[in-house]
Length: 197
Image (cartoon, rainbow, N blue to C red; front, side, top):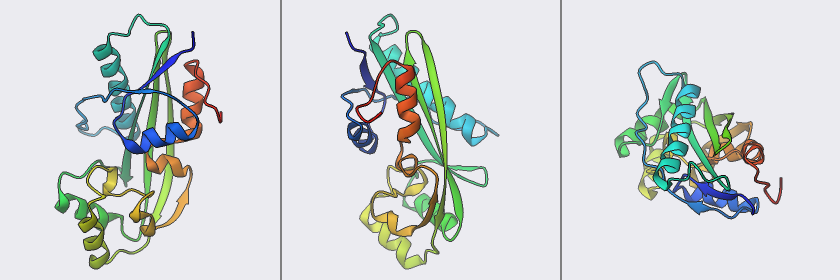
């Protein structure tokens, strides 16, 4: 019997990316505390949160003894000189983030975790993203369309904020929320082959 896949994410962007590589999966959203610990480095933070999401779904579904199930979880954050930008608390927080991203390069980190009864497999991806200079009018416009509300760093490169991105060094799908090359490797370690992998 082939291994079935559970995605521990309600993100429509992650759903679309997984479907793009030919995968069928069940969605079970993970409800975990995503508070960053004092002094926690960004890579350690995203890895801990991704692991927590995977284990929360394993425990919620009671599948720890099921050898034919794999759980995939991911966490993405924006890193500006060691400061972590998660999802904005409100529009004012989003404006603060976008003002700090304006005209400079930041890093987007994603941790991918695959859980199977035989073990946990992990991968990390980091992409450097450079923004153009944003004036107040550009930020006002972006906030008015509402795309910023559920996105780390208050922007989604795959949507209107793609106009803010001058350069991407690294995986573009990482910036969207799921670096496909690393995801395929983690899934393969869990016994799942993507159609394009």
